[in-house]
Amino acid sequence: MARGFPPQQRYRAGDMVLDVDVEIETRDGMLSGAVIRDGVISFRAQQDQETLVVPVVGIIGCK
Image (cartoon, rainbow, N blue to C red):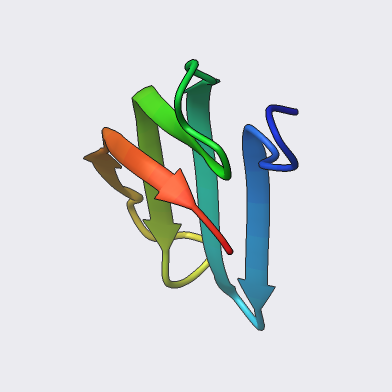
């Protein structure tokens, strides 16, 4: 866990599932955030349906 940001998270509501799986890197000069170097967000609406997978990169932070 980098600066309180977990690299894997799962959110569920009924049959809907949203998974977040990211590679988090801390850098000097970033006080309350981190860089997502690589990651995916996966969404499945119902248990027997296909999963939508979206690649993600960016910056996360909180204050």
